[in-house]
Length: 504
Image 1 (spheres, helix red, strand yellow):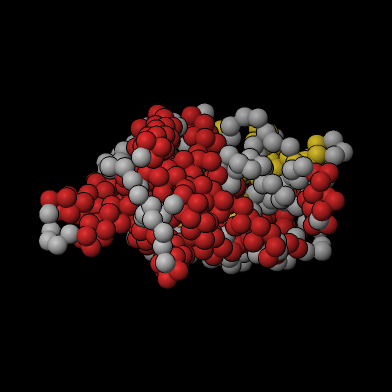
Image 2 (cartoon, rainbow, N blue to C red):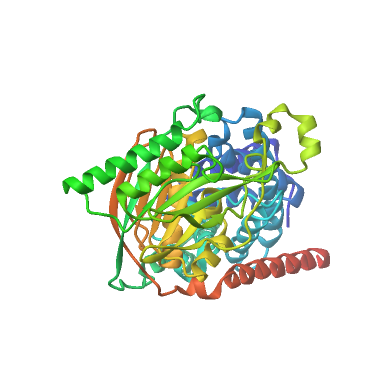
């Protein structure tokens, strides 16, 4: 049963919850101490042991804020108020999860139930509000760790589940060691379980090579400005930067210092002028495509009518010009469109910076380019399980993530996004190419290893040999089933705990 705590006890619990959040933050890139994730979870759980539901909620909120404020510090170029507001809203999900954890901690096998509630919390954050914000899921701290291979079995939800389960088992071990006068079988079993989870993860077999490759040229052109003004004052600079790097690649191919690519990938927003409406933009892209002699995947903002636009990836053929395209389906709230537009335009002048509102696409980004069908994912979309999954289901291989992180250059966003690409590579048995305007552009192999990457805020280009995989992982075949199973288990445990509490 919950009991009243002394003021010192309350302070210790609050400190433990905050320390747990900060420790979990250290697991995320660019620091990337992956082992801090289960340790941070364990400390957060210990802070909730034996407290009432209401107190658990505010302890969870404190821990969530301590974790999210540094993890989401990349939002600060938009404004410190936006950063604080986002962390404050997202911390409410931690409060709700902690309230549920205070209940299930009174049940047998409570480490299991706590882990399922964490999965439910991450699922809810991916849906609400305004379309969800699944950033900073625990799975995304495990781009290259003993837990990573669980992604091939059950996707990001299973990775988060196993990390939390390991941390909760560590918390259970601590409580039992403190309470017991001497080691017993339960303590030994708990210790064995905490060790077994990551060990089993590292033993999950991955699908092997299929012997086919494609040569991909990756272009990073850089931008003239920084922060919210990354485009600078002179139009077409971003476009010229990416075209110049492509000409440089073509020259290197002619000189024999680089192999000739089969296809070339530019980043999201690699042209700051609509090539459908600008003869100048079209001629610049045409010249680059003809020089390199292969199709280019161009990132553009295409105008739709007089009021709307689309964030679009266009296959640009050196002979026929623009062809097949993909329109971004998951748009960034307050970046590409303004939710509750009339209200927010009155509340904040910065809401006007969005300008013309983007409209989402309605089909997966499987685009035929040269010898392969690339699976195209635009920037923010890589955080959403279903969007990446149906791109793979549509035949996309390898995956290409076009991204524009120029506003957030040298923050913790680019390395966090790269870790997501690492997890997706393992989850779907697909190589992932990331093309970024300012970095980090990279090639991740299907085992999740970063084989090549650029620095930030510099022009860069390379040609990489990428495996073409077509075999699907278990995670790809079962889809969201593991996530829903874990969520329902957590809901059942919570109901059981509430029923038991009422009977008591």
